[in-house]
Length: 271
Image (cartoon, rainbow, N blue to C red; front, top):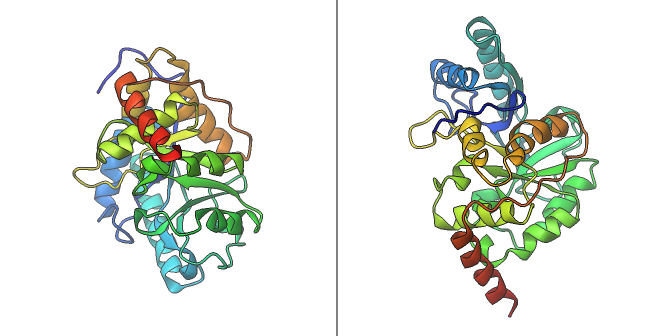
């Protein structure tokens, strides 16, 4: 997707999987560099690569391998795509609520930790899982809240997570319909209610997972509230990395039919 308009600032992608050979993301350095070249050419100039890391393994040798592979990628990126500021963080899969996550090197920056629930499933006590992260001094950024199975019929969790201070980081691909109808409906419903703090690509440098942050910006820039495009893809991601409060994002109705359908689902849950 392309647009005659251009982003108001450099785009900031704070969730993608480009460290090669350490998770289900990029297989090789060349795959990752090809992806970074696409990012650069479309205005995505700040990238935080966030390989999966299970909470109970944060002190393991696997983390050391991830960091070693990142250094190799970073050296190649400095040579071939020096315009892109590339840093390493992690997407922490919270498998045990009592795991020690106090190491500041785990975070995105600015005291924020990107987390996810295992297997794209809502755990029995998701609020306790997130509370355990906050109790260790982190601000929570929850990856792809729209993708957890059944979240459309348990939408109240999203409201409660936001009330507790958690940031909602929605996948661009969900907004564009790449992860199925429920994820698309929830993502667009969240946008319509002003409940998304930022978008990220969750790019895996693999076929079938191809949407970039610029694709999201292009789509949102065509909405009735185009300023939200910059807030979600540039301003707020940068503020998260700096440890600053996100700016409020105005409601963004991309598809009234989808929003109405999910609203009926949510009302059905509460009735």
